[in-house]
Length: 82
Image (cartoon, rainbow, N blue to C red):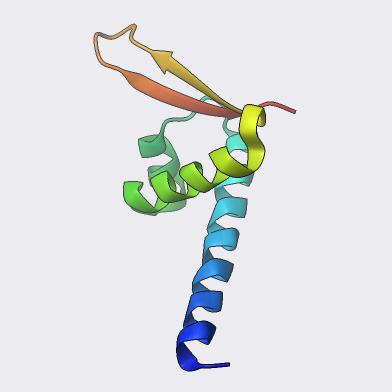
């Protein structure tokens, strides 16, 4: 296995670990925005966005996205449906 293959494999493992942490966070704190998740985990919003994108493709309809415009600004909230 080349160094590049090892690096790509490690990157995939880190992505899976991040996805699991975001999944667990959403189970604890339903209806959270990307910003709230990032603050709660101490991550950047970009890292959380990447994880959410991967979870969308893995979970399909189990990842619920709700748009809230009650304050005049769009807040996209994410939740896990069991």
